Structure formats: C-alpha cells, structure tokens
Length: 516
Image 1 (cartoon, rainbow, N blue to C red):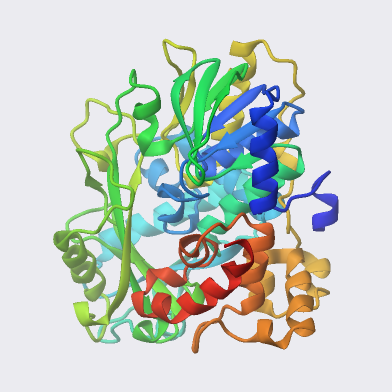
Image 2 (image 1 turned 180 degrees about the horizontal axis):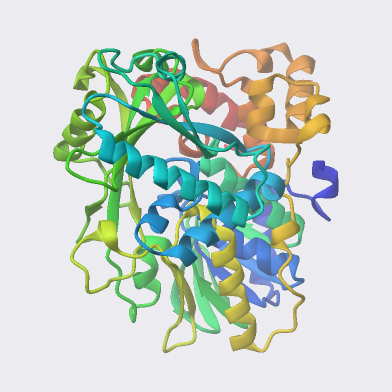
C-alpha cells in the first residue's frame, strides 16, 4: 500500500494551509463535527469523521501530540496486563487494535519487538511460571485477534547466550536464560499523531494548531488563533472533547484522576546495544514491571511508573526524584553494572486521563475508555490508551452521529492506511535510507530526493544526530510545524536530550526562516 492509495486529497499541513483554513472559518464555513484536542484520540476522531464524509474541524491549543500522546512508552501492546487482572474484554480489544495498527494503519511506524524477562536469581520458579503462563495467554490473545505468528512470533524460553545477545548488560551470574515474547513498538508516538492528522486533512478535515477553544457547548464554540489573537465564533452541529487530561476543563461534569508515567532516557551504549524490551519485575509485585526499550536516535527509554497525580495539570509534567530512584533501583536488579543518575541523558513524564473510580490506586483503575455526554451536549471521550485510540475514536464519532442526527457512512478506519503506510516488497523498493523509511514510510523517497538535490539538506542537523536537514524542511512544508519546539520536541525527539536540543537549534531556526 502506498501513500497515493491512502488518501483522496492533499495531506500537507503548513502555515499557508492553516491561514487559508482560518479565513474559511471566519467566513462561516459549515461544520458537522468540531474535535477539540490534537492528541492521538482527537486526531483519530478527526480522521474517522472526515473519512465518513463529515465536514470536520480539529482545533488544538498548542501542537499535535503536545500532551500525553508524546509521552508514552511507544508500545503498541496486546493488553497482557489487563488479562492478568481479569479484564478480558480490554485485553482482547488491545490485541485487536494492535493487529490493525501493525498490518494496516501504520505498518511503517510499528515494528515487532522482542520482550525479554531475564531469569536472574531473584526471579524464582513460582514467578518464572507466572510470567510464562502470562506469555502463553498473550499468545492466545494474539491468535484470537487474528494476528499471525509471522508478524508477532510465539513466546518461548531462550538460553542464557541468546538472552545476553538481546540484552548484553544483563547480569551473568546465575542467569538461567530468559522468557521471550513479542509485542509492537512505535518508532515514535508523536509521528503517529501527525500521520493521523495529515490523513484526516487528506480526507477534507481542517486541522488547526495554536487554536484554542473556549465557551464550548454541544453546538457552539469560540476559537482563538494564538498567533494573531483573532477570535472566531463557530456553530458546529456537534462537538467532540478529546482533550485528555484537560477534558474536565471543557466538560466540568466529569471527574478525572490522572496518573503519571515517568521514563528516563539513556544512551544506547549504557545498555550495550539493547535489541529487546528488557522487562524486569518490580520487587514485591507479581504484575508490575519496568521496561528498558531500544528507541530512535541511539537511545533507550526506561519506564514506567504509575503514580497518582492530583492537582492542576501542567503543560509538561516532570518526573519526581522518588520515581527516578524507583526506576533505577528496579532495573539495576537485572544489570551487571548498576546505572546511576549520571548515566541519565533526559527524562519525561506523561499524565494518563483516567476516570475517577472508588479504588485507591491508579495502577488498578481500568484503562477502559468511556464516551460521555455533557449537560450542554458535548461528547467527551476519556480513558483508554494509545493502542486503542482507533476504537475510542470510532465510539466517539458513533455517539456524535447519533446525538447530532448526522448523516454519515460507516466507520472506515479499520481498513484505512495512514499517509506513508507501506510494507513488504513495496517497502523494500523505496530508494531511501532505512532510517528514513522507518520514520516516513513511502514518503521517505521524497525526503531522499530533496537531500540529493540540495546537498546541504543531506547533512545532519547537528553532529552525531541521525536527523538530516531534509527532514526539518519536510516537517515545515508537510507536517504543520510552526516553531522550533514543534521541530525539536515532536516531529523529531531530539529535544529529549538537552545537549542534543541545543546542538540542533540553529538548524531548526534555519528551517523555519521561510515562514518566520
């Protein structure tokens, strides 16, 4: 499947398209669905609605993937943890949605990732049996979801030598081998959001960042362009609130209980060339693990915490010292040489938009999503997780159509590939570097052509960084970038490491000069 067969119109998002869209809205353009929030669920909802033929507008007060959607573990997982808790329906839904993402929606952005639990002395026979049973249950989930073993292989026990090949820094003394399963991993969660928004734009949706909504009801909203200060009154037929942890600011009738998930960023060298998700049980728990995940730009992400995060919601949550200590202490139980704070190159934290329940622990609150209707008629979608965004969007738009009496076709997103989607032999024929194909799929060819035409664009944006100037230029012309933060923190993840961010800042400024 190529990008040309994915969409019906122009998918490019840029400053000129944004300005033209704002003019049309100011002239009173008719709107069937107004989606508020440019995270994975909001972008997914905009795509679902526009692909059904609805006149759709998405507004986001900051940038695409500005909130929780860029702070995930980048895993597309099959819901094994939920199965362990007896939540079979959520686990099956996760496995189904994982298969859709890997096979159809974004095969260029999702890859199969081995998951390794090293059998070190602290993991006794009982816990080994428990993990093995869980992995076998994961195999059943995969088969039940229709995902073939050729895409996600069966779980198995492996020898110590193979465990060390996958995770070279694991302690050798007493290593009895490992348990291996497979799951999905995103190259980048923010890139998935951008691809969703661009595909929605190709189906006719208006996608506007730096555009805040306020005074929202079920059929009205004011929006303000933060770049000019201009305010426009909109009269959509329906409104979807997909603002995640900020959802109660749009719909005060709901009560959220956010939880914070923290990750640490390391150089890949700290883990000796890790090629699997190194999975280490949290001491004293039978169901919680931390993960060290190989990531883009020669990095490893270590997560994940699950801490109650009451109080005002910050734009960019920060890890706490106890969370950092927890992650280091847990992963070090499995490593020959312990990691310290001096090995940490960066960190990030995200807030999950969980619905308040009667349970005391956010770790046990159901990740099942909910579609709610406010007293003013706004349809709010909350809960859930990145893997199930598509189903969340489908349910939200189904509810919106029913509530607003809209005429629309059935949901199409189960079989709709995103812009750039490519796999198999067609992927092999793309004339571009593998790292570009992993990030852009079929669009990598256009970036490679730009780099060949202008040798300056073939150069890295900073020494030692595997992003070239042509990627920055493409982000400005096609991916809706409006400032350096968009480039460094979301279209690429250079900004997760402060030193890398500073090194790449001049190239970002140069790329933005044409729209400054």
